[in-house]
Structure formats: C-alpha cells, structure tokens
Image 1 (cartoon, helix red, strand yellow):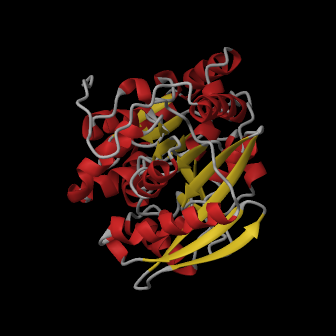
Image 2: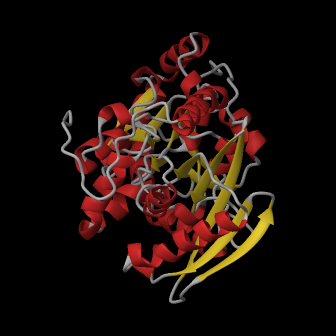
Length: 397
C-alpha cells in the first residue's frame, strides 16, 4: 500500500476542532492508501514546534510564528525539521507528499520532498493562496519553483488554475482542477413550483467575506420591485457575529425580508434548499463554495461571484455570475433568478439527468484524486524538478 503524507492547516484536530472538514472529506472518500496527516496550527509570538498525536497516523502540530506571515518561510522550516525527524523515528518513507495549500504547506512539502527525494503535489487554494502569494513578493520566485517542481497542482476551480498559470508560470499540463468534496452531494430534482423565497447558507462569522453587506444592499433594490420576496439565511455564529449580521441587515432596511434562521444539520441542507426559488451568495473571497455545489445538486439555480468560488464549474444555464462588489449587479442577478426560476430549474433537471454535475460529486472527485495519487506515487511521470533553478517554461496565456 502506498503512503501519502498530508500537510494541512485545515484538518480538525484537538487543538482546533472547528476547522473545515474539506480535507477530511477528501481523504475519507479515497481508499487504498495509507494517509499520514500532519495538521498545522499557528500560534502568534511563540517559537518552536509542539506536537500532539490524535489518532493513528494523525499528528497535530502547534508552531510559533508572527501574524501576517512575517518571515513566513523561516518560521515554517522547523516544521519540516520536525516532520523529517518524526518520519525517521517511525522508519516511514512516504511515496508522495500532498501540500494542501501551495503558499504555506507547499514551502514545507517542497523542503521535505528535496530532502527525501520523493515527489509532491500541491493544492492551490483560491482564497488563501492568492492572498498570500500576492502579498509575499519576496517569495514569488520560490513559489514559482514549487509550482515547477510539483508533480501536480490541484486548483479547486478553473479561475484558480488561470491564476497559477499567469502568476506562477505553472505549466498547464501539470494542472488538474479538483473540486472540493462537499458534506452532502445527493441529486434532488428541482421543485417546479414558483416561489418568492431565496436561501443562503454560511457561517455568520464569515459574513464580510461572504458579502452579506452587498447582498443586503442588493435585496433593498429587489424588494422595491418585488415586495413579497424573502431571503432566509441559515448558519450559526458567535454572539459577536450574530450582532454584526443583524446590524448589517438593519442598516440596509431589509429586516422584514432578510431573516437569520440559525444553523442547519448537514444532512438537512439540501432537502431544505430544494423548496426555494434560488440560492444567492456572491462572496468577496471564496476558494470553492461547497454550498453552491450542494445547491445546484439539490435542484436550485444559483447566484455566484465572478472569478471566485465555483466560477467555471457550473453551467451558465444553472445560474447567474456577478461582480461581488456591485450591489446593483447582485440585485440584477437575483431579479433574473426570480423571473426565470422555472426555466432554469428545468435546465438543471436536464443537466442532472445527463450527469452534467457528476464532477461535483464525491465519487467522481475521489476517482480523479486516486488517479493523481497513483501517478505521483509510482513516479510514472517525468518529474524534472531541479532543486534551486527554475526552468525556462513556455506558458499558455
């Protein structure tokens, strides 16, 4: 059995149990490999590394580093030292390393891959990676080197793939879009009854990133034309976040139409969605947007942000893309969804029947990821990854 070493800051562990389960969902969907996971947790203004095992082949790591990515590469080096020593202690040599974000975990994975002379792959996370890579100009050449040496770069959506090509000189043939495994991915035929009810689902602590203020401003315009419209927002949050979200809604003067409904259990999200006219959320920053995928699988037309989240993964007939910063454009998109909901739901039903959304489902993503791991672990591909000099690349633009 091949062994995959995973380095990720997005795995729930005893130090931070509330992290997203996206990486765990992916690993849980793939069998036939030994998955060895190191889960990273940064602690401001500390030094060194502390480790806490939390299961077979699972280790939580706390590492000291300043905020804002100050001296990022220097403070990540001790993690590579720790993992290398821990692998040696276990007499364990992985077949491939997966860095679950290029800009942070990729620095560690590239270091370990060079020391151990094994291949690595790297996810490209559209939110975090683009933010860090854009900010860390001094590391740009190093990031380009990581992109050149990786067996595969795995962006979650096409727009992130374009970013990797344009910013990191990544070779298109080394890039494979790998959507995120969602919590629920059943296919539910659309409810073909007209409705004035809209739905959005997100954690309220992320209201700024999810664009709640722009969405509420847009709803003010929509309500003027369609006074019966209602937007139900499902999602939990801290007391501070609930207060903040309530203030945003009140300032937009849409308290009667935009309602906070609390959290939904994962297995209830899709069935609840199915009874609405459309799913609306246009985030300012979003790597993927698992709920958008769940919504279209549940038969709902969706509103999403241009060059964010699931942009490029959903057929245009299934929703509307918009400028996440423009309340007028978001309002126009919502009006289009409401006016054309039956036609769009009919199109979604046809796409569901044709299997056009299978790339968003667990079994398809797992099959693709399994093939990626097998190729990388077997060394079947020519890696051609020089340790320090970045090769001259011919890049399609």
